Length: 96
Image (cartoon, rainbow, N blue to C red; front, side):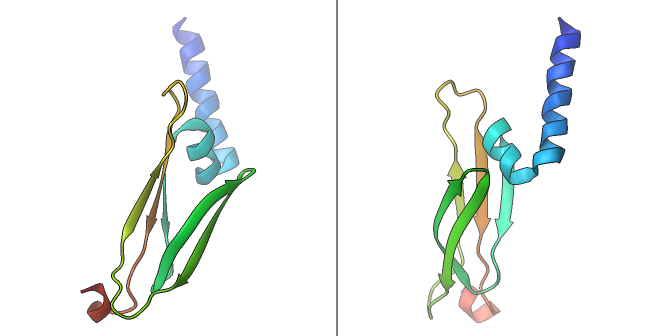
């Protein structure tokens, strides 16, 4: 029984390196962080097949950088992924 468990863990680890972090987080659980370019705000994020797409816009005057956490909730609650999107201000004044 334990050999089967180790085989499954090995396959999951191999899939993580083959598919990349975003796909692994979506299909196998785990966490991936995306750091946006300085001065960009996240508008929307979605999956299209195996690709993660996100819409950004320029940060407006007075806006502060934020961190967004998107959690996957699976039906069985077994494999759930997290995508963290981190914004950063262009300069120290904008960061507040």
